[in-house]
Amino acid sequence: MNLKNHFLMAMPDLSGDYFGNTLTYICEHNDEGAMGIVINRPTDVSVLELLAKLNMKPERRWVEQLVLDGGPVAQDRGFVLYRSVEEFGTSVEVAENIHLSTAMETLTGIASGDGPENFLIALGYAGWSEGQLESEISRNSWLTVEATPEILFETPSEAKLQTAAKLLGIDFSLIAAQPGHG
Image (tube, rainbow, N blue to C red; front, side, top):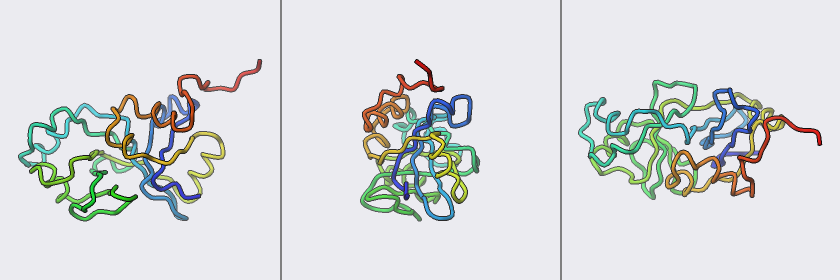
């Protein structure tokens, strides 16, 4: 099982947990574990504010886009997930035209308007050790589906989880947290 370039949808039994109601994009998955970015949990900090704090002179158009709470690991580190045919700074290709970067050059490019147009900036990431994610999936903590760039970059945060569930033909609002007996 390789879930790179897949979405993880937190099942309702994770409500109350850090991952309750989250949609996570898996950037890496191998024998050593998995790494992803939570893509539907915005913070109250705009991209404009973050870039200004880094002493960059960003364009005002980033005032509406919010930085994401990308996960509970390394929340002081920034990650840029972006869609582009070209790479900006030091990046890792996750899927065709989708890259992940921690490089300051990527943020500088975004601030100056020379970087990618479609991007998400997150602080922190989600990580799983060897076999941990597979075990959680076998316990029905997560549903998985292949990721789409439209959900990643074009769907509003509050609609991402439900939109991803629709890829599986599921209405997430109808799933119970506990199994019932009828």
